[in-house]
Image (cartoon, rainbow, N blue to C red; front, side, top):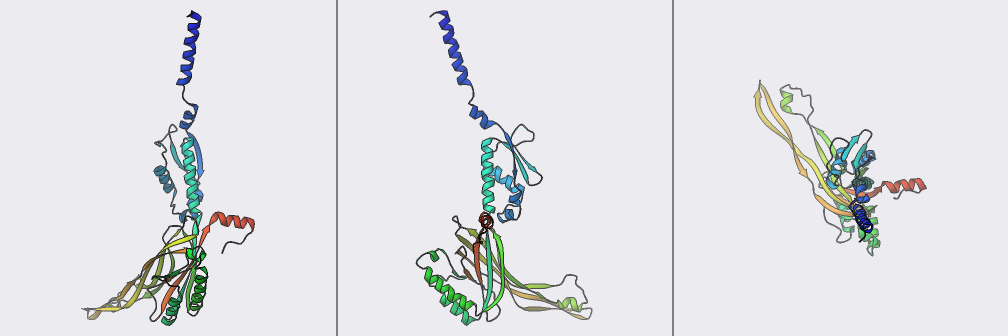
Length: 330
């Protein structure tokens, strides 16, 4: 082979070799660190509390647990997470990691977007009216303490029968006394008290009174109920799953205990006797539907029931309705 051709062959081989040996520009881009600043303040407000996001540390923890960020370290050389004022989170990472961070923050925003508004009416019925209420409930729908709930069946063949039964139940409930009505918005998946009524009952300790002891802190107990719920919205956002627990206390009497004489004065210790009541149950309620929970607590010869009506609150929908001037869904 002529020298010139040999030289060209070697040069070509070297040229090809150098091209093959060079790193892929894309892989270089994947390793390049980019700094982005994310506004996490909206996730930490009232909506954030609704989604269970306590503070910026909670978001940082989620990022570290779910995303392979690399090893964050002080300085500008490697990956970094920097919490800044004004609800800002500065992230120094690769473009791929930034995509994952954005997806995570968007997911948290969607979770914060959902809440459950619950209207709770407490009705007092006499035993006869309560028996009528129970008999008006369709068979298979009664499982104490949750007496009734409107679930998926309202959209099927049972719908008309359920609707008829609900009208009869409402008629019976209206014969009773409305003890109280309340409504509030609750976090999706977070425990909350949806209805409560506790009467403060002060009492005097005769031992203090007879001994001439003045108490700075008054003595009292509370009698009544609290209905605690964990509401969870279904994946299709059409139903609310409730785990319901009643936490109630009833005062059954006052116990006096003779402690003898001190300084010529008879000392009697007084303390209230209380009974803890309650029950738990679970049910699924359609958005805008109704559930009826019977309380273990009630005044003598009366029955108390709590009627719950949940409505799924989605901030994005509310914003659209307001922008378009449409009425908010019932």
